[in-house]
Length: 180
Image 1 (cartoon, helix red, strand yellow):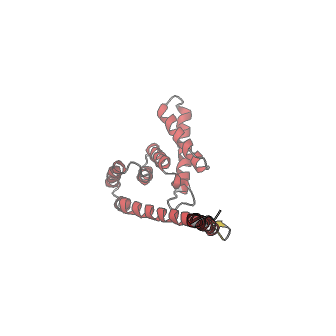
Image 2 (cartoon, rainbow, N blue to C red):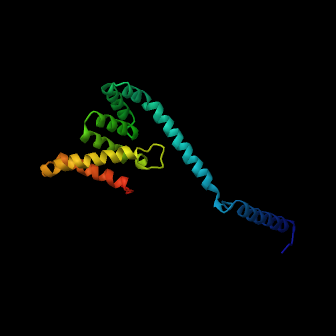
C-alpha cells in the first residue's frame, strides 16, 4: 500500500482533500442558528432592491407628481405619456396615469391604466409592499363595479363595456390574492 514515496504523497493529498471537504461541509452547511444561512442575504437583497426601485421611481416620476400637485394635470399626463413610452416595462407610470384619469373623471380609462400597471407589477396590490396602492385600487374597483356594472346591464352587447368589466374582474381577483 505505501510502497514508495509517490504512493505516500498521493495518500497524504487524498487525506488532506477529504479532511478539507468534511470541514467545508460541516462549517458551511448553510444553516446558522437553525435558519438557512442564505435567507438573511436574500432578505437583505430584496429590501435593497425595493429601496433602489422606490428611489428610481421617485427620481423618474417626481416631476410628474409635482405637476399633478400643482394642478397641471394635462402637462403631467403628457410628461407621463413620454415616460411610459420610454420605460414600457415600468408599472408606476400606468398607476399614476390611472390615478390622474380617475381624478379627471375618466373611470374606464383609469381602470385600463391600473389594469396595465398591475399586469406589469403586482406589488401595487400587495399590502406589504412599499409600493402598495391597495386601498386606492379597491376603491376604484368598487366604484367601477357599480358604474360600469350598471352600464353593462343596460347595454349587454357593448364590447367596450364588457372589456372594462373583464379588467375590473381581473383587478378584483388580484386584490383577492389571485395571480395571473
